[in-house]
Amino acid sequence: MTEFLSLSAWLPIIVVSVISLLIGAAATLLLFRPGKKRRPSLKKKRPTRQRIAKQSKQLDSESLHKAYELITNLTATLNYQRVLDIALDLSMQVLTTPENNAGRLVSTVLLFSKSDTQEPGLYVGAARRFTRSDLRCTFPAQRGLLKDTIDEGAPIVIQDISQDTELGRILAFQSCNSAYCFPLQQGLDTYGVLLVAHPESKYFTTVRREMLDIIGNQAVVAIQNACLYQELEREKERMMEIQEKARKKLARNLHDGPTQSVAAIAMRVNFARRLIARDTDAAAEELHKIEDLARRTTKEIRHMLFTLRPLVLESQGLKVALESMSNKMKETYGQNVLVDIDPDIVDELEMGKQGVIFFIVEEAVNNARKHAEADHIWVRLKMFQQDIAMLEIQDDGTGFDVGAVDATYEHRGSLGMVNMRERSELVSGILNIKSAEGEGTYIQVVIPLNEDASDRLRHGL
Image (cartoon, rainbow, N blue to C red; front, side):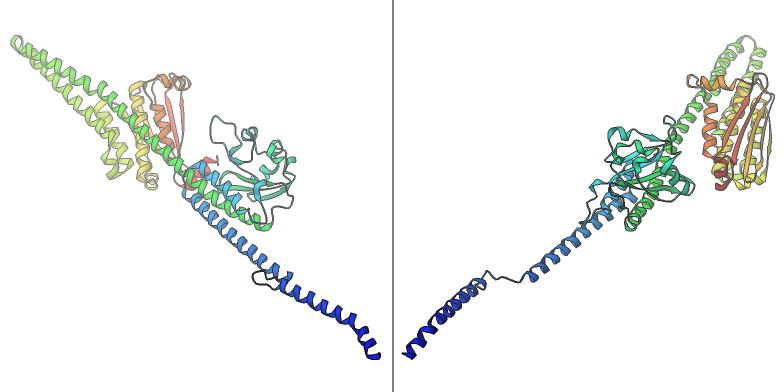
């Protein structure tokens, strides 16, 4: 009885233990069955971080590749507008990371106006997230962020750009709490500014500012190259126009000079041929006149050929070329041209500039001979200031009203004054013409002899 009671007492314990073992075994089978392995939660996070790091590295690599392509395009293109667009796209690209979406950036390139039809100041060259009304805005750059950036010549970060005295009227900036303004400057030339704004007040960290500085510096070089290319294209067009005007001038001179003389010779020869049968003495006298006219025509043609390409200029320089022109003027037209040239100045002029100065003088002297009825024409080249020369062409002719002639130039066939102005610009010179009816004409061209003098002259120093 005692043994039976003892077994009865242990029976519940044994049953409970067996059930626990069965439940444990079932749980083990569920947890570790093939294809459904479970891992601790700590191990589950490790591949996720690796995957995120891998994706981040891949995105960074793609962003750097795109940024490199944009920088390459920025420095390679000579299209002015494309330079501005690439600079803004590049700013967006380098500021975009997996942790930061730069989609709320507002950016623009503001450029100084160089057109006579636009008011002085900055206008929108390119922009991102600007409204149509924003794109039409112009800025005098006399106050606020724009003035400070240009005056200091260094980048500036500000808060509350919407409160700026000039930029505050831009609707796209109303939601922005910080801005970074980079001056697009190279030496003495200021092209404008690169301006980027964002809603976050502390968005422009040191790293982001350094990236924008790199873009700004690259943009300055690209803008300068594009400007030089545009100037080169304009210069080519102007040279083509000058050549076309020279051809028209040659055709006009041939028509008014040698062509008329040859026609007169033909008429006189016909007249002399008929005189021979009736009056040999009269015919002989007529033949002498024909001979004189033919000689004079030959001199005119030679003078025209000399002015078209003065070989003596190439071989012996400006001073000898102008003296030779003076002699030919006296010989061909009886015109007194007095030349006084400082040889030291000629030595400092490259051959291209000497050629331009020669043609300025030739144009002025011919105008005085044809229209002023001057007894004397003086040509002087002397030193004006340090590294700056002055060319003077003066006559004692009838003179003219400079304002009236300028006002009617588009209706006139002669373009002498326009030619002189354009040629003066080719040597970075400044042309002044003073004249009055009955008082003769005085033409002055101030010519810099080197780049430093050209900068001083351009800035009025």
